[in-house]
Length: 166
Image (cartoon, helix red, strand yellow):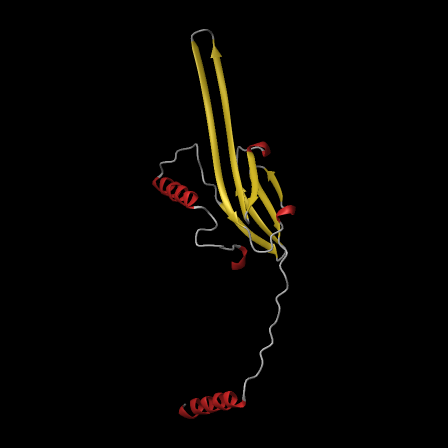
């Protein structure tokens, strides 16, 4: 299961500026200073079999038109932005406007062999599910050749020495 996320570099494929943005976002998130207009929704990444990777993310209040999926350089980018404006007019003297804005952005490094052309996504009841087909080549077994007989004799003498000391 650890082979689902590939790290091309120590920076996860992000530029220096993106790393700095990520650092500040994480700082403000842990400090509780971001407020309600920007969230980093949690992402679940799993594989049901060896041919698919699934990315699930909570996106309540978002519609399919509010979410954008892009693949660039082996990185799946998920961005969402929504705004809602509610106006109430009561007579000529009172006027109330309520606005709600929400946005998020997440990046997921795709595994080696990911088929970016056949990625599918579904949004159902606030749960975004992105399925990434992965073509994993079969592992090639490499035959180990036996060395000279001195190596075998040395191994046998080491084994005998260890058994005699017990």
